[in-house]
Length: 176
Image 1: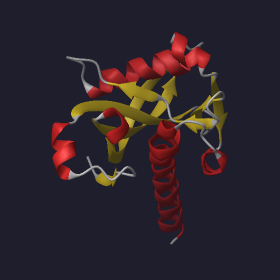
Image 2: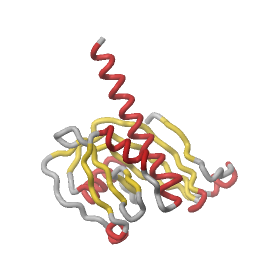
Image 3: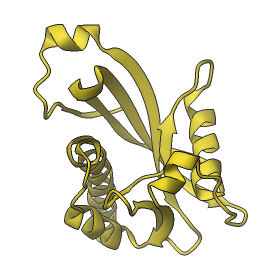
Image 4: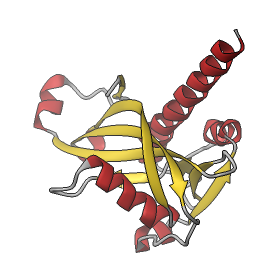
C-alpha cells in the first residue's frame, strides 16, 4: 500500500516511538449508490471522521474494515481499491498507529449502525455527503479533544483530499 505520511504533532523521538505499542486501524471512503461518502459526525467532540477502527487480534484488514462498516454504518461493503496509509505517532497514548485506508461501496441496503456506548455518548451520527462537502466539514471542524485535533481530523482530511485529487486527475485525463 502507498505510504502517505507520518503524523507526529507531539514530536515523538525515534527512541520514544521504538517503545510505543503498535496498533493497526483500518479506514474507508465508502460511497453509496448516489455517489455520496459516509462521514461520522462526532457531535459531542465537534468533529467528523471516516468509518473504521481497530483491527482485532487474528483479524485480516478487509475483514476488520467490513466489520467496522457494519457496526458504524449499518452497511455491508465491497472494497475495491486503496487510498494509502498514514502512520500516527500518538505520544499521548504511547502508540504507533498504522492506518491504511481503502475505497469501498455499499452493497445492498443501508441499515442501522450498532454504535458502542462510547460512540453513542460522543454523539456519533452518520452523514452521507458529496466528497467536496465532506472535505469542507473536516476543514471547518474545531475538535474539543486533543486526539481529534491532532490525529483524527488531519488523518481523515488527508485521505479525503487525496481521493478528491485522484478523482480530479482521472476526470482531467478522461477529457483529454
